[in-house]
Length: 519
Image 1: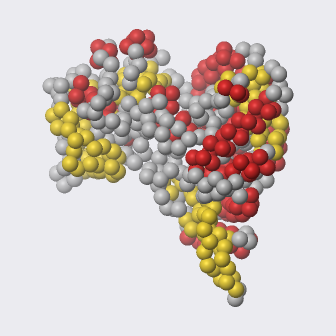
Image 2: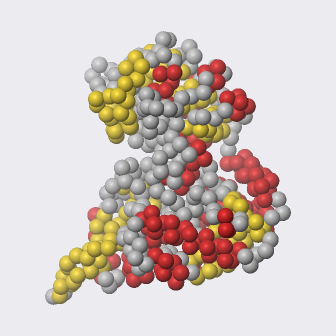
Image 3: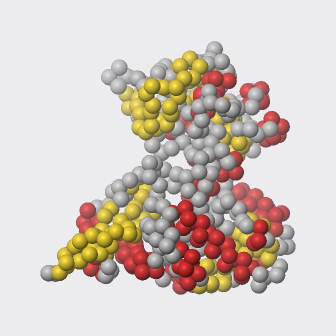
């Protein structure tokens, strides 16, 4: 099996590179840039990709690629910072740019190259190929190493892509891995399939077999408790672990009082009917609400919810004397936003209650079989495990639940208002055929009141925001362009049916620069 090594320099998008390669059915792994030469050599990569990163190639202790990457003589593809370190390490020059580029840019292909051959969004009047790309850089290449040629440029970045076609070394200043680069997937495919000659032989059934064997090898005859939320991730994790160890798995469903409308009942019924896994329902609403009282900071709320979640688990784990593992449905985006995954090179965006390890007092080992997968890959895994599509394609719901959809202090009053408003929004999306068209949709409670009028009376009540996005990987996202009449109907229903809310707004922010959740 052909393998691709991705050298991580700390980009928030490193895992997206892996996802694009997996979509080509080619196996890949992510290693930190300071991995030992022996591990790279033992991995025997067919190709190497240098990721982007937040550093400057001229900063103190700047990250560099190990020399063995060049010694093994396989194709190399540098992206953003990856291109800059490729240039610097091979004798070129990089400088701080007076014109930074963050966001959309147009570049022109210069001459024919194997990397950009027949790849363009359109042509200009002179017949030159043009590409719409996503830039994110402050430094830029000003001089290329011997043997390289410039294969793309624009006014702000005269050296936007380079090639050493004899050695099959390539670099691009933009990010082909993000969806904002329209032909980015084609560029990556060109490098992986046509230049590196990797064969598409890796698939999800192979992953299932590998994952099951890893679980068996790790767990042995031990018993496992899984933190069940009822969402896609924990459900697929439960199915996978159950397939590996059977009755050795017990699921604990913690109700923190911050679930969607009728969530607890739905989760218990779904798992009883579809999975055949033992599930214990724990209503811990009072504990969570008590500990969240007076807390407004989103990071503090996440940490409190995470701490309480673990404490509840700990209390119930003590009832199972043979349990040695706590399983969670942690996936790649959770890990990335909580400090860049296993490599720990990326900057922290926000913490996740199921990321970062466990307190020593829990005395359980952590099992995360989905940690290397993106949301769409988790769904494909679930399909391969024969889980019902209704379960798999339900919109994601954060582990902290409505706790991060209530801005400011969390109160049960706010949660009750929010879950009713959210249920109306989701119901209308489904009835109007928009639920399947959106990747995630939900309602956010704003801790502010606005003046309104109902009948002949003045109202002074709360505001909620609707949020709906479209994405393929949850690393980047566009706001969903819902019809005005649908938004109007949702607004009218919420204001009329949920006493305490008199204003509804719609969030039209993309990711980046915003996150999908508000907190």
